[in-house]
Image 1 (cartoon, helix red, strand yellow):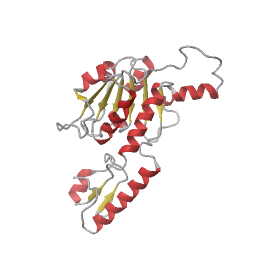
Image 2 (spheres, one colour):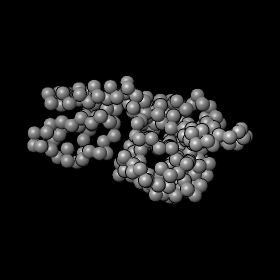
Image 3 (cartoon, one colour):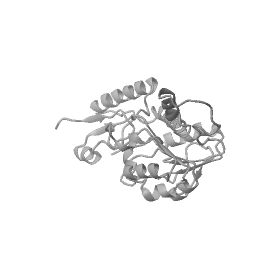
Image 4 (tube, helix red, strand yellow):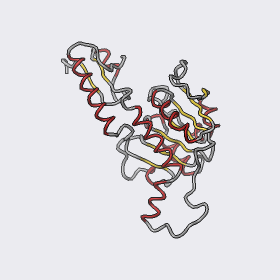
Length: 256
């Protein structure tokens, strides 16, 4: 409406908002960075482990009577120790993911980021270009923002660069992935598996092809879903709106 002064989004991503229109109309935008970093990075690591160690598959085997006896290579998957992990988008969440993975004994952490500034945390990660990261990494973790530069960043050509044993994890936005290309890569063995907290569309239809793939773990965009994070996000959003309505400095204002 014509009297709209401020919008508060309970998220750090703003790809669902028409930023150009807000700027034209002088509407301020509050968002919730920082307070969801730990929750989202925790979830990303959990998703990586659930995918690589095939936890959902193993659970389903028990439920459907598939657990008959012990076998040396049944339900095996790649371990983190001695591996190379590539993180696309090395902001707050990406760095927090890398920091959490180091104690698992990863050999090397690679990253790409749009900024030329060095990472805020010195965790020994190595900056490289995307193609080199994809070729080297055993685990590819996507935490970048969805922008015009990253939309459909992961195409069939990018998946083809990855190791056939690689695990792909996306906790950023579904729009960074060409989903048809991902489905083909998973079906044909171009990559080993994928763990997705985000996809296109959301919610995903119950008959979607991704849900038919045993090597794809899908969860319903719950990266920030800890009680503590959601409470902090809600409080920050309220404070953003109040400050915006009063014409004061917002605790977390998105620069338009």
